[in-house]
Length: 416
Image (tube, rainbow, N blue to C red; front, side, top):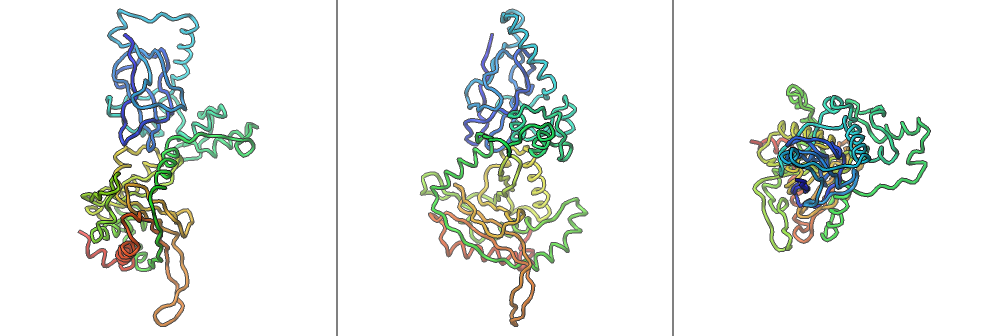
């Protein structure tokens, strides 16, 4: 008996996703729980497994196209029926299936979770190369390679463990005498993370927002960071300023819980979460992702630093789970790492506020005796939902947060 397999509900309200890679071909025999394909949702790369053993008889969605939840993804003849029923094929169909199977031989990967439990595909570079020399690259890079008919296995990767970037593909094309995208028109439909960002930013236009900026003096915080760095290094953790900002934000939220609430869809009900869940924007090869550090009120600086490193690496590898991308009550965007000083971040519903951290600068300022002194300064810009947050409330909240950062001894006194 032939049976259609429907794309399962992956969660988070996702209704469609891009089919990045088929890991099987028509005519292939598959086992229960064997990985069938990789799909890119709004936020992460997810692997879809088979729920029955059998033979793949039809692939409904082409690689690079969008697959819809609850719509047929592939058709298979169930294993229990293969002994008593077979599907006749013409010679040309049989040859085509054989060729497809040979083509995909080096691209199959081991099984994943059961139906309804599609898991994020976080295949390590070593395993990827062991499983048929499959190149390690993001979906955007794979799309670029497909458009130029490039075999990624032939492209030398400049990234860690041989990861192939867009620049590597373009350099390979230039070496082959093929036109790069700078020499010819190149069109790419929005999909995956960038399509999600387009939708979310469009939705944010319904929010009446305002921006508030302030200059932070971080001399004392930097001195504390330098003193703590060796202690963190002994635990194998790189210490940056961001864990301090997150912890101070959590302390400020304890005094101003309104900033960590969310506004429900009817725009008339505020919901206060049971913890401080801070989203941190991460620049990745596939676009902007915002992993979430949950319950920051219960985490130490060391735990926050370790978790921040793990989530950042997972975001750039495309291996974040849906749970790690959901539930933020407030967000931080560290635009300063890219050189920016002032920004107007976009607050996205149902959150009520987001802060953008600018570049740290050593600038001259006057001290209390009117002498010119050097100060380590950072401009921080907030955007807030003006339906709930007014300017005075945001200013007081920011002053509280700023106080913990400019006088970190006060922050340490409240840690537990």
